[in-house]
Length: 252
Length: 92
Picture 1 (tube, one colour):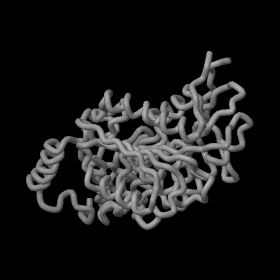
Picture 2 (cartoon, helix red, strand yellow; picture 1 turned 30 degrees about the horizontal axis):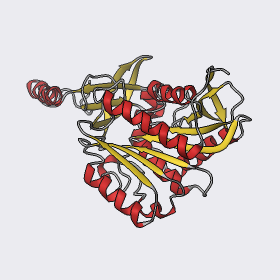
Picture 3 (cartoon, helix red, strand yellow; picture 1 turned 135 degrees about the vertical axis):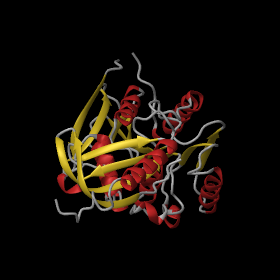
Picture 4 (spheres, chains in turn green, cyan; picture 1 turned 180 degrees about the horizontal axis):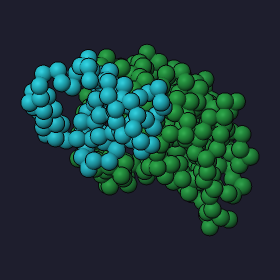
């Protein structure tokens, strides 16, 4: 047995979009996780999450959602450039996550199950892709403080993203939602509405909100980091994915 | 919280980035999470020329107090100079 992993930049799908992948080197079988990066881009902290999943027994991949618009750019430059263009169309994000899920399923050590996780804008997109993709593509989703899931961002933002409220009935997998009580976007009242809508549709929604935490409490490189919430949140993420995807820790 | 609010303004001028001087044609102005400044939220400005690609950018992240002081300083500097001296239509 081994706890070795390999982490590297890869190019996936017919369009050869850039992605960051980390995989255990053992024979498996391992479940897969698609990590959706936040609006600040395909950055170091997101890549660290990808490696964390691999170390914990998952095949993990994060497609660079800004690759087409800003190939080779620094993550902050790519983020600013894409923001200035109104963001990425939802259908492009859905297609790229589908490509990433297919790349995981193509690995010989994969167990056939794929989860998706995103933070901030990625949290909204985790819900979006889980509703938009056919049943069986995504088997479990984690939404970490996804903003603007129910209402589109203000017109002043110029962003192309739309409400996904009307798509939530098509959600095809259980969802874990992790939020901060002090977050203004999504505020607890919006999370209540999300929970009510998912309940109306009979969807599985496991929700936890942390006292004293605001937006971005998982981000260790930002002032909003809240270690207790983040440590507990990671435990809940692995418990959820383990339960729905068949994950287990690597043995040495 | 993420605001996603972005004000965009067309500009005429120049800025100096990592690759040297370039024409500035647009600024995006928004209050959101900074990449570097040690605060939860800042007033961020991206001076850019999108035609030259993502790296043609000069970014600043300012506290609200600093941003308002900057606005006042810009206004004061323009008011102290002869009217129209820095106008794009002034012949040199």
